Length: 474
Image 1 (cartoon, rainbow, N blue to C red):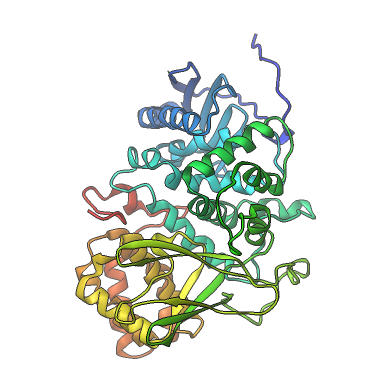
Image 2: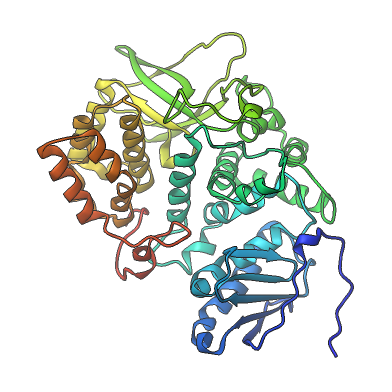
């Protein structure tokens, strides 16, 4: 006879019951939480790494967020031919068997953040936390993802979510599900990739310690209760006192957060020379197909597809943060004093969830810098510049000859993840360019981007290339 402890208050969809002939490996965290990794007997040799990694994740995550009294046990089960990919149920996480070595690496993250009952629209940020944690706590990813560094998966998820978020078929992070068929659509690249990207951007705005305090405040306040996205932003406002917002006054996280969670899409920031000592920055919504219409309920967002955008740029070796404001009254540009002899990048390390584009002079300065010494920029910054260049070319804001000139430095590039970036754009390159340029260009991309894609978007080479480098600088 099996006996069970009393079920806590929870959403019914978080309940899981499993009957199987699987076998398991078992371990415990330092505070005694029992972990068991279950699989079919023929997969038993794959469980050791997954068990060790999951226990480590649990311990690190609990310490970071101050959560240490939620669950007494956690079972993690590899289910053959599991169509959902993964389900983070209460104390029993299920996932597809082929992902045994990989998915369990992140399992401890999911259920901890989802331990409260159904958090209606804030659940998107729980799923996005998979992407976020790699940036919030480097050790979580760094220890177990070699040769990857902790942010490499994050930037790949960022690119994937932006590709979807540039379409009229996208949706806001925080949205109401009108019919049951919309539920599966809510667990997509927007929830995971964009959710993590937005939270990471918020973290960089308020600082890691403030972010940590706010999340702890939110989790403790709404443990075993229902909550909304706005409740999370309010928890930030209750916790953070000394962070300045776009107007120079105290940051209003509720207003700032809603701009990014309640309207879909993201901004394109354009940087143009203004005079000999300044550049002008403006914003607009980035759309791959501007004439396409979204669902009717998303056509008139309260913020008019404008955002208060945090920008990060380097000047004389120091990192600066400024705001390109949404400006309800008029579309006023932002002017920055710069050294016109030095290229400027306003999204250092891909901290912000936006694209950037330059005038001709701006791109030429970046091209010269890449050719002379590309390592003056971090790997993540280089990744962002190239990704943004492709994005600008796709909407006819950058000609492809300039793009190819930018990419001409690639034979000197040592970071293999950076070279994987171009693969999703091969089809577009073939469509937009003809003749010798197309043949040479596409062949180059095949050489540097020949990897097998997993179902979750990560490449096989990313986990199976011993000795390969990553986006982190050597």
